[in-house]
Image 1 (tube, one colour):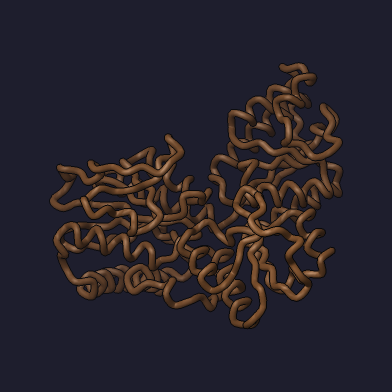
Image 2: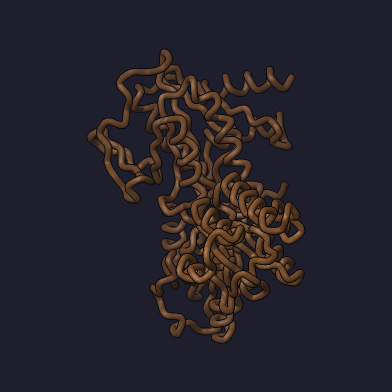
Length: 418
């Protein structure tokens, strides 16, 4: 597995050591059993996989290389490189400006760019329309293109489907940068349609089965169709691809549901439904599967879960959803959300906003000490998780020293690997 040159301050002395010890005994990451760190006064359950993924580390390496290789030049990111405030804030402190926000609204006009400026394409990729605008200005957008390889894999699969005269249904959040980019690339080669969830998939399936009048289709999916999309003919044959940060289980459930609708329409045949299971991002799937495995342990022993990541991070929000099914869950962007008066600032998915809770810390425990499931999204540095862990340890009175906890954990791993 390739390693990346990322700034040392994103690494961590605790989480990094745990991951290294697990990798020594399980280099292929086949064992999904969570790690447990016992500080005596508090216990942490850590999923086997969490934190920076391949695509994020690749993007960070490229962005910081752009800074080091271009002293004196104007450097720009099209929008947030990844959805993590710590990373984006540090890049801004390095002199990088932002051309757009995450919704695609202009922050700095493209007209101000010159061919000598450096523009970094974020990990989500960008649309063909934006690429064309930058190339017209004379900007080299390939030198520091951080688009995740797994996002590009989805684009390539959509192109293949189009060449075989299939349409493409994209499971994603319509306003998300990655979905906008995928829709643009897909639409260049195939009739394309975006659906955001199973509820919309059920509506689409009812049209395919002939249960709804096609006259209502354009209103149901307004602004979600590629130019010239026509029904029912453009849904005669299609495949489902996804925004890589969505829940993989949701994408598969949607694909299965739409496949069943095609079979109902075509008398049991699924020849006009393309198999696209290979477009699911392995890193997102690994994190979600590892979180589910950790929740199996946490279900009986943990008191609550803490998920660390950017509040606009799609993959992080889905980890929160998984945890909320089992435990009281707090979604925080970092240790700065712990308030001096003991409260906790956090993001509520239900309310869609940042809140402050004074009663987040339980008054009774399920075992002799508080037990916390702690994880993070794919765009969150391990160093940020470290600071959250250490803040909770201090709240509980300190307990065992970090070195002692890691020594005991290393002994446990050595015994398991013997």
